[in-house]
Length: 135
Image 1 (cartoon, rainbow, N blue to C red):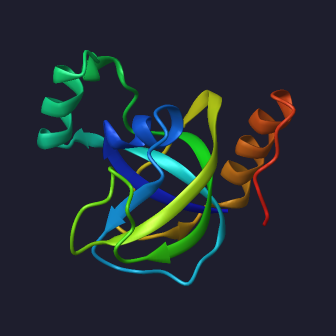
Image 2: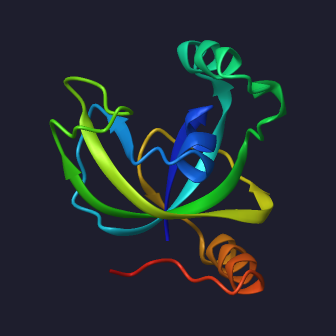
């Protein structure tokens, strides 16, 4: 399974608030399940937004894999309120938050997880009677 590091509060928004595109400066050919890693650093602008919206961003997990989404398309010009101008919009759907977040050292790229970490994610999803989307 691939993994993508996302700063908080955006990792939380992908899994819990209906954020459907992840804004990136680069594209990818990958389609399918992607584990979401909440990076150790907060996004300053996102933290201001979250606090204004009433969230305590200091409680959001960081430095761990927090869930799985289905990356089903990458476009420009997505009309979502979450989409930033001049970005590639990685269209995500079917978010599933892990019951037990998994410690992971993030990377700046979309990378393949070791088999042991993927197995832990799959076990967590099975405990929820969920499977990653493979559309």
